[in-house]
Structure formats: C-alpha cells, structure tokens
Length: 344
Ligand code: SAH
Image 1 (cartoon, helix red, strand yellow):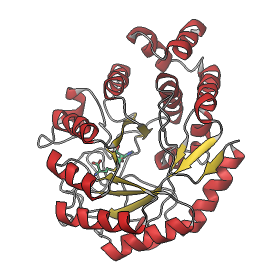
Image 2 (cartoon, rainbow, N blue to C red; image 1 turned 90 degrees about the vertical axis):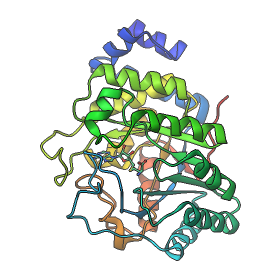
Image 3 (cartoon, helix red, strand yellow; image 1 turned 60 degrees about the horizontal axis):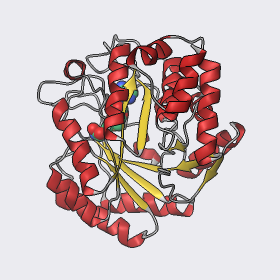
C-alpha cells in the first residue's frame, strides 16, 4: 500500500486496481492526508480561497431523487430572490472581502436566459474586479455563451456520477447523463473556468463508480472539483437511504489533491454538516476553498438540499468570521484575492 501511495504522489495517477484498493482501505488515511497536504502546500501554500454563495432560488423543474428541492417535494416553501436582493448580497459580500460570487439555484423557469444575463451584467458592471460564478444547471450552449458574454466567467456543474447506469438510478428518465457531460465540455469550450464533482456515498454507489468519476475528471480537467457526502433528505424518494461517509469523503479529497495538484477543491457545506469539524478535516486532507453563505438569512433554511444543513441561522458577516477562525485553527489562512486556479 505504501508503494501505491508513493506512486500516486509522484505520478498523479494510478491504475484502476490500485486506485480502488486505496479507496477501500482506511489503513493509509494518515499518510494519504499528509501527502495531499504536502502537494497542496507546494502549489498553494496555506492559502484558502473564499467564494460567497448566493442561493437565489429553490424553484426547480428537475426531480433528482436525492435532492430536497426537487420539483415533486410539495413540502418546501419556494422562494426566489429579486435582482435587488441578489445585488445587495454582492454588496454586502464585497464589503466583507469576497471577490467571487457564486449564484446557485434550482433550474427555475422564471430566470430565463435574458434575466440571468441582466443580473450577471449588472454584477459585472458594479464589481469589475470580481469573478462571477454560475451554478444553475443544464442549458443550451448558446445560453451558456450569452451568460459568458454578459460577464460570467466560472461555472459549477457537478457531473454527479460518471456511470451512466448509476446516473439513471439517481435521476428520473427525463434527465440524461450524456447531456450533463456535454454541458461541461460546452462550458469549457466557451472559456469558462469549470467546476465539476460528485456526491460521495450516494445510493447504489460502488468503488468502481468512484473510479469512473476520477477517470471522467481526468478527461474533463476541471479547474474546481467539488465533492461532499450524500446526505439524506426526509422528503425525497431516498429518505431511507443512509448518509455517505465522512471518512470516504476525506479520502477522496486527498486522492483528488494528489491526482489534480492544481485543482481548487472546496471543503463543502455538506462536509461541515456531517461532522462539526468536517470542513477543517477537509482542508487538512487537501481542500483549499471554502464557500460561506451570503444568502439572506430569511431564506437560508429554505435552500434545503439535505437535512440539518449548517450555517442557516447566521448573518453573512458571522459566517465569514466563523470560517476565518476555523481555517486559521486548521493551520491555513483565508485570502481575499480572486483566487484563480494555478495550473502550473
Ligand atoms: N441546480 C444546480 C445546483 C444543484 S445544488 C445544478 O443542477 O447543478 C448543488 C449540488 O448539491 C448538486 O450538484 C449535488 O451534488 C448536491 N446535492 C444535492 N442534493 C444533495 C444531498 N441530498 N446530499 C448531498 N449533496 C446534495
């Protein structure tokens, strides 16, 4: 096993069999996290980048079986932020030192291509020194291009699972894994910095699926890779499924850092939800991004992708300073620059 780890650290790749073996044992975790931290410090030092997350709508036309804001969940109180609300979040975030805004939401028909473009243009005009990231699901390439022209420069779209059969077990027939992958390559072609990723421990997931996820990411070469444990939501068809595991998520963060030394890897909110120190552990296993919530407190609880989500009661400034402390306690330091990927 030690040879496997050494090979991964030196070559940033492993054959399938060794990769699967590494994912299936906890024997190497200590050494694995140390190796990931070494590689991360070589490229990024102790820097941790912040992205201000604005969850601007929980309406969604999709019906993903795992997601709490799926269309068929009649128990969610739906909301959408106005253009003014969104701009106010950015203004507050800018004052707190954020230089990246992530607009995330369900696939909400109200936010047409034109409306999204208007919002993006206005943010671009008011905050010319900031990165604008969209995370609003699947669109035609022409729409992605229009958002880009309006001023968006990054896009987050997790592939969720690279295995076609597994994808179909997590999503209704109207959603296509081929289309989701197509979207990711379209986004790259347009010139976006792209983030992808997957849930760890989603129902029916096997080690072979995880291996396929890593291979897909090698093909896509995204700038950012977001992973977090699958967390069960009580009002979804997966209500009886168990949560994903903290340990496996951390192991995968470390493997991602070793396979993709350049990548921006967030310590996600889902990781902080499954364990009170989850995000700190994620940073120590190779993550280098945190995404504090900038949404108005009045809507935070309503963006409930999964149960018991953290940070739903605090003002943005509190979220920011809480993370600042946590990152420092883990031995790293938040930086407020735009935080572009370092490919070399
Ligand atoms: N509508 C956008 C944003 C989705 S929410 C899109 O389709 O890209 C962002 C991410 O949350 C999803 O990509 C998914 O990986 C994750 N997520 C959704 N439900 C979850 C759950 N129950 N547990 C953990 N992560 C979840």
